[in-house]
Image (tube, rainbow, N blue to C red; front, side, top):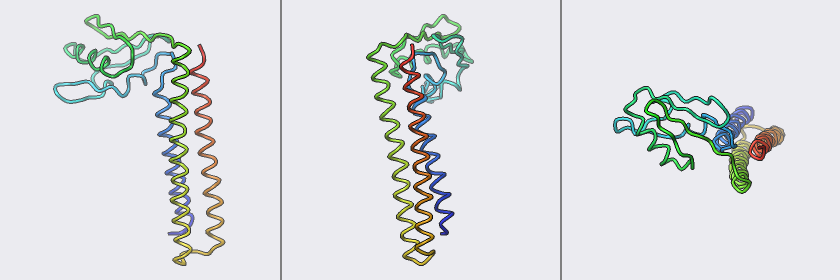
Length: 186
């Protein structure tokens, strides 16, 4: 395998690791209503766990309310039950037509807990990027040993791999700082 293929593969894997980290960070509450807060909730729809977005329309009319308008009224109870079971810590209000979820403001202690959780997600993302780098470095050393390319090619590829690693870790740090700022704002 040529060094450029190894570099491209590692860059793609690192980008996916950063995207996964971003997705995890986006699920953390910031005190504002967001459709992403209920994105992962599964509703028992005729015996099948189904994503909330597939059984109704999720909208955010203001910064403190999430509204779920189900496609079928008879599923309102199942949606309400799924929200309670999700562990969001929010109480849905069912008026027979739609479900409203008021999003309470965060306490200072809760904000700090969310920042700690975000730091954990970011660290997991950095570890994933570093593991990709380590695995690809091994692939480069094996390729040189198998005479697929020269030592100079391996060293150049390792330097490029390190640049990609540094860039992706910096991306994760940037996303973390942005999320921390969002969480700590009132």
